[in-house]
Length: 339
Image 1: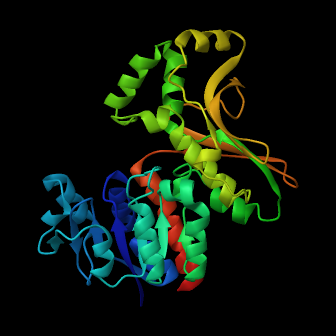
Image 2 (image 1 turned 90 degrees about the vertical axis):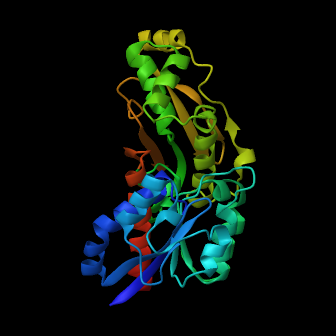
């Protein structure tokens, strides 16, 4: 039986989602693809659990949630962290889920490049290194002859990057326009349905755990702009970075503006546009009943093609298990091509 030994870096909500997804699906993967997934290390920001013979995924989650760090994992907990984890154990694939950083791209950039240098494949949900150094990172993967997959970096469980490359491989793609941030979509949807002001709706979203304690990345359009860059590079072949995107968030949207739009049959949504003519994130008017009329934390995108016309995809854009599902799909893709 072939093995794929995995390191999970970043054991926040997405990292725990990865562990849960592997626990739920490893028997199926073993049966269908003849490969046994084995988590040999997992690390949070300062601690880790490492065992060459494999760790129990649900025990990793329990250790983290009960004690606050992975050093609490029985027998195999440690204070090894960061890049050192990649030297502490033999592995085949890095699943990288550390927090997004669009200023330095760390720690994702360093972890990813080190894994490439060690000849290891990488699957990531991170947007930072892709938003500011897409060409550098993808070139490094190519030079080292390894697989680099990042479906989960855009839209969570909504299929778009692999969908564009594989299902729409016969088509030339002209543009992508959509809702790429679930938090802002939830806030705007609630403001529309309840008539509530922005600040109260944001606070409610934070209390529900939908918006972060510091919601800046979401509500100011930064998260959607990162995804815009990734789609520009990966799907349309536009050599762009975060600085090339025009960005406006939703913090200035009032309930009065939403009400006025509604009277004319429109909604206000935070829309990302990816095309040769524009890389832009901004609030826009969209027609009620159109493909953009979605609620909650859903994401959607309309892909304009030359042969297939407009193709619209939709899915949950947030959630630990949902994001992990996209990452595990990337892992399976690597297994199918290399094992």
